[in-house]
Length: 55
Image 1 (spheres, helix red, strand yellow):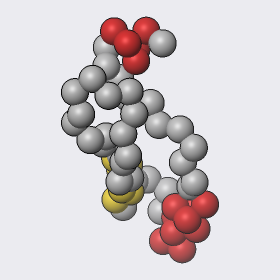
Image 2: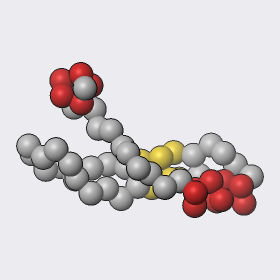
Image 3: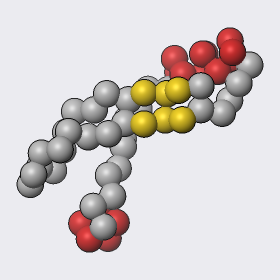
Image 4: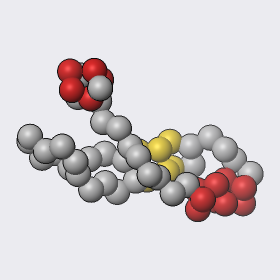
């Protein structure tokens, strides 16, 4: 709660990572960059995201 309220840290929940797991297995690589930036809405408590994993 402290990170969310005082530091503005975003928290991701309910990610379905089955597809990412299958792609890692196919590529034989398990290192990737994962980004899921929220929309910059002032005063909002939630936002849709477009998660992206880059190998």
